[in-house]
Image (cartoon, rainbow, N blue to C red; front, side, top):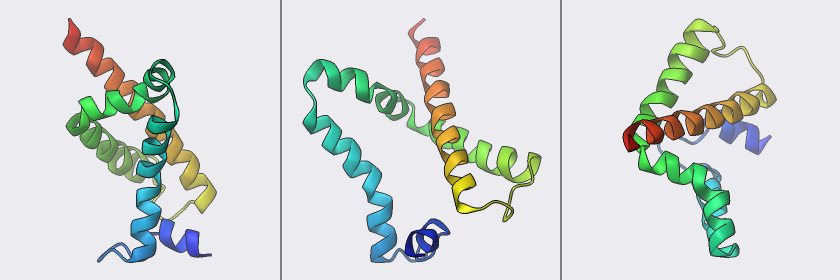
Length: 110
């Protein structure tokens, strides 16, 4: 029940401790992975995050566009999905953002 409340933005404005910890978990996971693996493995495992970091503004604009235009208006999903469906759409959004940033990286290298 607590995780569903946090995922529903409970305690987001202003941020409460549980929301801050929940939101920081991903960053700590990435930090842990970067400290755990050797250099070669680290480069391969964390490269998608590097792509997003190199194009952070474009990634931010892309994910806002997908959430508001794609999910909310085109698919009309606002307040109509449960927590598990939201997790699936979030995973899809992360995957699409990685692909978008990778494509931007290929375009800027030329």
